[in-house]
Length: 275
Image (cartoon, rainbow, N blue to C red):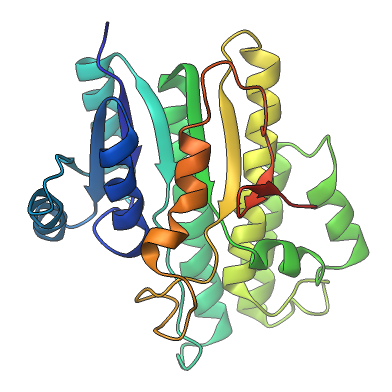
């Protein structure tokens, strides 16, 4: 039997580190903590090793396509593919950040939507039969969706929106934000929220594609909200610990063999949420 493998992006701290910790305890296979910064990634591996766990490390910067393709080639060569992919890496500007909205829109979507999409573009073909894809989104994705114009809401919810159309909409948001015209065009005043609306929608599009193109492979692809978690990103007032935030992503990563749902859903506290 080939060794199974799971990859967690942005695994060196916060929710990503907690996901790696939980998987090291529960997953029957190799668990890769990936991080942009080699030093921080290796430090995180050392930290988990001191808890008696055995994560492995691979450098992976989702904002660098060369880094993505290098990692994809490594996992294909060593494991023949990937069993579980957890796209956790993401960024958020602090509320008090003074960067103009135009900058926040471009930078936030670059990582949370476009770079995560690059990950999926290169790793989806490597996902083995029975595989699991988990995109760490946020409850603000649903809230932000409801702040979009009725026409935009209709497209984000539609069964026939394509990846190309979605990419066009995300690009349109950034362009309008740069000109200060996003509100007039029906877009909300939140770059982070919209980046996650895009990611949740992308998850649904790719789940439909997997069902159509690889119907017998039993791959499940979902987006989830870990909850409001105490991390560098969300601050110290959040009610959940990182280990509690890891519960839903890990649940989706470990859905049992033969499971058919959830698939193409947005999940919070292990429950499918309306979209």
